[in-house]
Length: 192
Image (tube, rainbow, N blue to C red; front, side, top):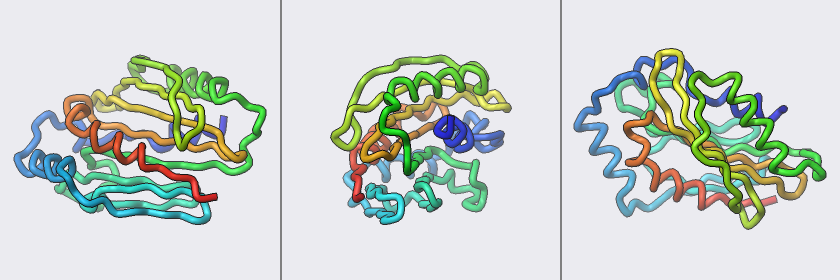
């Protein structure tokens, strides 16, 4: 239940910037810069025990349980909801070791069905994250302004900690940002 609340609280809220259908040339250029062979920066949080790489043109927002990386739309960097792509890396300490990842993921999916408008589960598969068995959930939903989103959650339990990578982008832009988001997710390391 804690992971569901944490996941739901980090999803996009009403966002006029995200509801826009037109992408400016500046935004397109930013996407190409990010997906090019850019040298990534490394973020490490010894308290949460995570280390992850991110592109230098993305901003990071540290929190006690993790970090959020945001590719701004360039219009208003102080608007947390005005973004082109977002990735959250979260860890929750003290997660019960006897809770199967699948049971936790089932609860999250059920929560999404109730709390996300037009939720549609695209896929629910086994995968790995930080060399541990994980569940990957790919889904779509709409925000209160009817902007469509495509999202992915990947979760695993390791060393009595729940690790979650979650990324989402407005649907028309999802495929263009997917390679960079997958590279970031694949760079996650556990340092505890």
